[in-house]
Image (tube, rainbow, N blue to C red; front, side, top):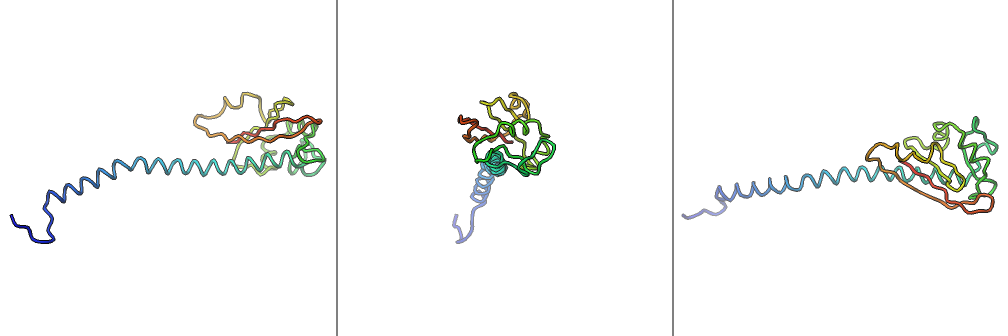
Length: 161
């Protein structure tokens, strides 16, 4: 059988098409999976940025106004006159404050958070078992800083999701 130039036998054509179809079907789940994880990564990046901002604002600022109370504040802050030195009275004012007002004051809309100073027994806005109450498959970002209370160094942790 003599072939003319530029002609492809039907069996070669179908074999090529089957290869392309197999290739697409085999790798499609990996491509879709990468898109999902990329979206989750972007979302966690946004949570990470807000969480770091919230924690830095809380421990490095006295808040606005400087003599804020649980009933009146624009931005809460738990630092004493020196950034990184925590004021116990402000910590307990924060602990007694309305969570949604604190979130708005800190610019934390779009995330949920838990602020803890374990050495002082402070778990805001809930108790130590907050983690058990999270929905399944929730990615939680944890950030921490070292601060001082009454001259003692303590770990300050913020969990955000």
